Each structure stands twice: as structure tokens, then as C-alpha cells.
Length: 250
Image 1 (cartoon, rainbow, N blue to C red):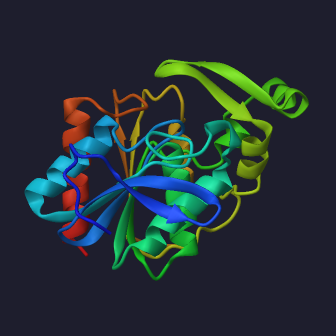
Image 2 (spheres, rainbow, N blue to C red):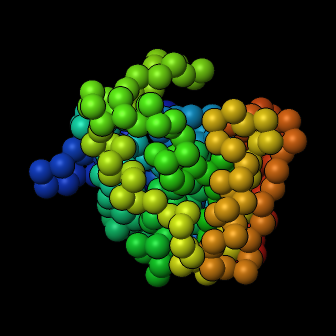
């Protein structure tokens, strides 16, 4: 992978018959940090940018990318599924070298767990931010699920931008990737940040992940007045302190 100035255009990962994935890689000390954005988000979000700036100051390796159909990557958002975005993340892992620490935000926290299960020889540690595994189950009521199945898609208002679109293909794919019903086979350190005032993802989800992950080195950090994004200056400071301590422990 090439070294990029974040102000320059991204590099692209070429894949036979699949959309090219935009990425930015910053070389440095390993394990490299791999950031996994949330649903309909990309690698230019405030948390990804803050971690990248911290990595530059700390001499740490950092890899950011956009899922197909998001940000600067090719593809269509409404043709993507949770499994295809998991495969995008695995493609980035397989195109890189060395150990990784995965940082996953919201849906990215679900993909973080799926990637760690699929590549246990590459992933050293996990840091979830309002991790949202299984949101296809608990994130929709029965009426919304029926509308997704009958109409093929649903649009819901979003506090963060345009309406959130969920397709039948995405929802069915996500249902097949659920994790919260069985032990999660990962043995490295896990840190889970979650705002107690999060209106999107209830705190019990992170607590359930903590209980199911096989590792004994798991910490759940609740931010009493924290929202879903955890992007306030004090939230970013907590994120960077947690990441720094986690990396130094490896």
C-alpha cells in the first residue's frame, strides 16, 4: 500500500469484477490501526480524521477506507449488503501486511467483530465505539421489518443527514451475520466505548458483546452524557487515550 498525504486524492484497491475501494494509508509503527466507519459513513468522519491526526503525531500506522457505494469508493450504496461490506473490509486486511488493531464505529463495530473472527491471525485488539452488532434485529420494530420485506426497502429520518435507506438485501444479509446469540471467538484485548445517552444503540449491546467475547481482557467504558457519535472534544480525547493505552499494551 502507498503512503498518502490525507489532503491528496485516495489510492484505490483494484478488485476483479468488484467496485474499487478508496483508501488512505499512513505508514508508521504497528500494529496498524484499521478504522471501520458506521452505516452510510466514510473515512472522512470526525473520529477517523482525529485518529489519523493522532497517528501522524504518534508515528503510528493507520489505514482508512470507504466501503463500496460510500465516500470515494466505487459502487452503489443500495446494492451493498452487510456481508459485502464485511468482504470489503477483509479485502483491505488481505491487501495490507502485519498485525492490526480494529476500531469500529456503530455498524463498523459489527464488522470489526466479523473481521476479527475471519482473520484471527491478523487482528491483535478491538476498540468499538457504540458498537451495533445485530441491529437488523433490535434496531427495527416488527412493522418496519415487514415493510422492508414487502416493499424491498425502507427510508427512515436520520439526525445525521439524508434519510437512512435499508434494503431487503441488506437486512437479510445482516440477519445472517448476527453474533449476539453465541460466544464470540476473539482472545485479544477489547475496549468498548458507549454513550449512556445514545438514542440509536442501547448500552446493553456493548455489555452483551463484552459478555460474549471469549477474551478475558475486556473493558466497557460508559460515558454518562455521551450520544451516539461520541464526537465531542472530550469524547475524542477519551477515544485517543483509550487507543493509546490499548496499543501500548500490545
